[in-house]
Amino acid sequence: MALAHAILVSLVERPYSGYDLAKQFDGSVGFFWSASHQQIYRELSKLEAQGWIASETILQEGRPDKKLYQVTEQGNQQLLEWIAQASEPMPIKDDLLVKIFGGYVAQKQIILEELERHRQAHQEKLSTYKALERRYFQNPQQLAEQAKFQYLTLLNGISYETHWIAWCEQAIQLLS
Image 1 (cartoon, rainbow, N blue to C red):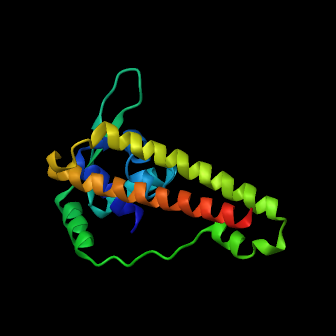
Image 2: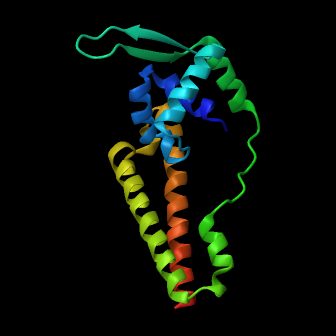
């Protein structure tokens, strides 16, 4: 997936300014596709040049003018074509797993501390996801269609974090 598609998915919901998109991106699509605000702004310019999005300048008093971006028909068509394409599972690229694979060359305590740090980080992310689930998705079968799709991505995040916590705990137990 390209950043362009993540932005199109975010903008298809409603128009956003670059600033608001970057903030919104941090709290939704950003959970599973990361990008800096600078990358998002650069991509917005490219998408507009390609005709996939259009902007409207909103004049503001006492502040710089604001550009609102929205998906064009061409952008919507690109998004539909991309969604219809088969997605390949992503290969694992994880520094921690490389460290663990070669961890026998280091002091065990260093590896145990790294595992505990990762366990805590995954626990914090899981807590965030569980809070989102409680706040927005209490009755999954009664959700609007759009919300069901968003809930499915949250469920994947919950499963992912739960798996990592369990694995870290197994690794810590094995090495202790």
